[in-house]
Length: 241
Image (cartoon, rainbow, N blue to C red; front, side):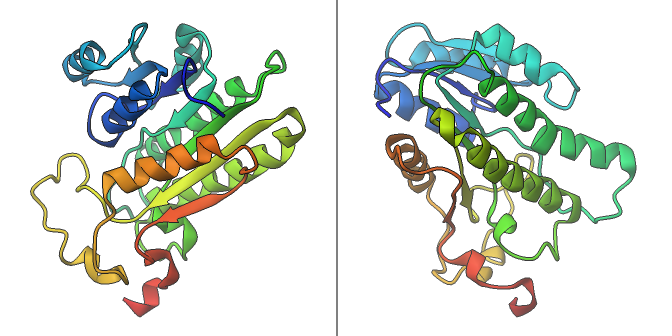
């Protein structure tokens, strides 16, 4: 698929990795709908800085049921969907139900709702959706409990949609990055400990992640794949750490 002239919805796009994805796609001629939750000022600034015209900022709390569908309607649909928004923390599997539901709402149910909207019966042209996951989905969920389970659920949904929608030329794929940037709120934390779990010993560069996303978009034969961009981290079991 060519990116020039295509409309793209990116969740969690006002800052960090989402903002970088938005910049790179805009540079290639895409019209961007940036979603944010609270980062409205950063999002407005980014919209003004993006090359091209027609870019928009849309706010929605994806922890609230129904907000994802409202976001899609406000965007007016898209040719390319990138589910980037997530919430992360090391969480036990027995996390209190209310908090566990928040993780699943943002990390699974809202992306799933957007995928359903994306694959509406009215769509007639080839399109692609990319889910940004985590290297956790490619190895046993011995750590990070509810967070890891919510991401694994989205990985399974990616494969299910890819198989179901392939006859319509609708593609669904995902990237699974390793350690890249400290989570929001933990920007000053050291990454030296977690990098011991990465065979290459290096973090995932944000530009590498963007390159993988661009490859998925441009490769019309690729669907259903979860591409690890993690320096080999998925090759190691938690028991080896």
